[in-house]
Length: 589
Ligand SMILES: Nc1ncnc2c1ncn2[C@@H]1O[C@H](COP(=O)(O)OP(=O)(O)OP(=O)(O)O)[C@@H](O)[C@H]1O
Ligand SMILES: [Mg+2]
Image (cartoon, rainbow, N blue to C red):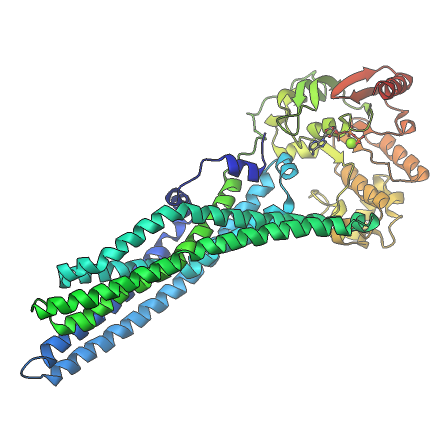
């Protein structure tokens, strides 16, 4: 299954701006009332602002350029204008308040939606996407949308409303002069519709490179110790430099694309002014229109039409950037998790605890790692998986723990497809100590109780008692401050062996039916290792154990040994058999 977002995005058919916008509006459909309120407010503001020039123009022609000058009429009209402007102030205030909230709530909803999606996506997704790029999508791309919604959308609608109103006034005051004034606008419309897709593509490339740079930073921060130990600072500097340079180039290209509208719009608006001036005076000389209407109303309406249009040029690019960001987010939200849930089936009575039935699996579509695997694990027995590095042991264990699902075939737990179990129940039955244990920042106690509701309300003394009863007491003793030992920055403050001990305690305390240990003792001294062996032996008799180990002495007590190599799992009769298979594998490879 392909989960690579950049790849999926490149292959997806280019969505039109409007279909993107429609999908986005569906996501904030619960904000309908606020959007209508803001829209009404903006229409009132624009409407009032448009009435101004007409009232002034009419006042000049009616009360000033007539034989009997009527200053009282002028004053009355000024009073009307004053009241109208007060209303316009109030409505624009309402609009700002409402839309600021909508933008922030949308940012909140979107970030939540993405984060929740990330929680349910399969492990394969995280293998194929860099964390830095995902963070950039959650932070940067959603913020682009927020900026547009909280700051620009209403300006955008306001500009369109003012423009439309001004257009209607222009045409209704004098259709000839009005239509002439609007000719440059048609050219602007044409130019915009031709260049929009190009601008959106440039912005999408820029956002992608921001994601790439963020991924680069994240990788070098994660691995700074390796970088320093191998003196590879230059290499990472070079790689970062490349990512930064790429970002710089795409940012410039996006900037050029975004700003290309401004001069074109400015030029064409100036043409409109010339048309009003020349053609308006001509019509006045023919007596077809009053001078007040030409010099005040028409000039104002032409401004009211072309100024918002110029603003629209800037807003349009903000809109295109927001839509490019939205596309990147929408790709995450649209992903289907391929960890299917099958209908619940009743477990079979005599079924083995776990069975692999004709299982095929690969991390990516182009490479198969496991080929037609069949084996059974009986309750209460101890199994060992041995085999050369890269042979597929961790992969097999990951399928048992359902970190991934098979491409073909099935993994059965108590005779029922593992996919038919509720994930909570599945994880309760199976405990997995990973080859690379991961601890969260916090204390040893928090890490031991991670995902274990049972002892959350226990005091430290009570929990220590439980730990002692599970024969884990001696392990806890290796931590200076016991349960309160601090674990900082993802477990860096304690040793790898100690991490494995925490992971061991975490898994055992959950009392799983099946416990998988992937190289769980690789970083532990021989005495502690023996201790772990004893603890394993003392687990309830019904617990099935799967031990993956390179050191063969750790699996001496296994009831059955499986040899895993080149994606095949074969039964080895005895430890000696396993040794022979390993040696043979080494010789042939
Ligand atoms: N996350 C992954 N994405 C892609 N391929 C992977 C991934 N993890 C493992 N592989 C590939 O799967 C194969 C089996 O790897 P696996 O980790 O199962 O081996 P292993 O037997 O556990 O090795 P080791 O003894 O080193 O732990 C390897 O060829 C490896 O390249
Ligand atoms: Mg492994």
